[in-house]
Image (cartoon, rainbow, N blue to C red; front, side, top):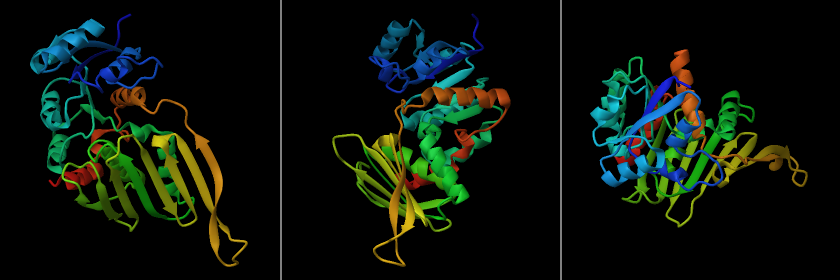
Amino acid sequence: MTKKYRAALIGLGNIAWKYDRDNCDNEITTHMEAYLNSDDVEVVGGFDPCEDARNEFSKKYQVKAFDSIEELIEEKVDILSICSPSKFHYDHLKRALSSDIKMVWLEKPPVENITEFKEMVSLIGDTKVNVNYMRRHHPFFKKIREITKNKNYGVLQSCEVSFSKGFLTNGSHMVDLIAFIVDEKVSIDFSNITKDGSSGVGVGKTKTGTSVLIKGSDVPYHYLESIFVFEKGRIVVKNGGKEWIEEERIENADYPGTFSLKQKYTESFEQNLGFIKEGLDDLIQNFEQKRDSDLSFVKFENTLKLISELIGE
């Protein structure tokens, strides 16, 4: 069966395909597996400057691997995954936008500063570019965004996120989640983090006064947690997005005239947290429907401003 779109990958490392190399539970955690599980896409090639990476990829998938991006693009590519290290995203995206490629699936962070972001926005034209901040697909965080917007528990007073594995790895996701959920300008002081970005604290406020606290710990295990405090309740998302705890304000029976929190609802999320196949589907729908979604490159200005502050640009 002839497929509608021809895909290729720049950068043949973990997020491109290696996370799924020994995957035995059928979860899709890489660009390549998302493509292989799509009825609309065939993969026609990959690029990596490392010969061993090219050989390993070609042997695994029986797909051509090139040592030149120009040769790769000549394969009449419709969708290009940019999975290279973040310092190369600007150059690789610029090359993609100067070609006839219809769609670009870009790893996070999309570029390294707000100047690069604005330049790329001016060059995008009709090309659809999505960023793989896949936690924007998580139903828990979508729900918190709606609760915040609709003020179900009143005004959001504070949000606190904590994580391991560094500010530019997991921290980048958490910075984006804050920008996504509050959907307004956020300013954060990152001066109290370590030089290598492994740990520390960022403190700030949104334009309307919501307090923001970002905490990174240099510990030998993976964790992501977030707490959202509203006037009339609190929501905690634990274990990287697998546990939801919702509490509501009630009158304190022991101390009349005061209030406390009571657990209202809990939920566990048992599905794969990768959401990477959803990211591909979203990109294709954006192209076919000529729309922009929450994952479109142009929607990440607030996130890029925070990342620029984080890395001191």
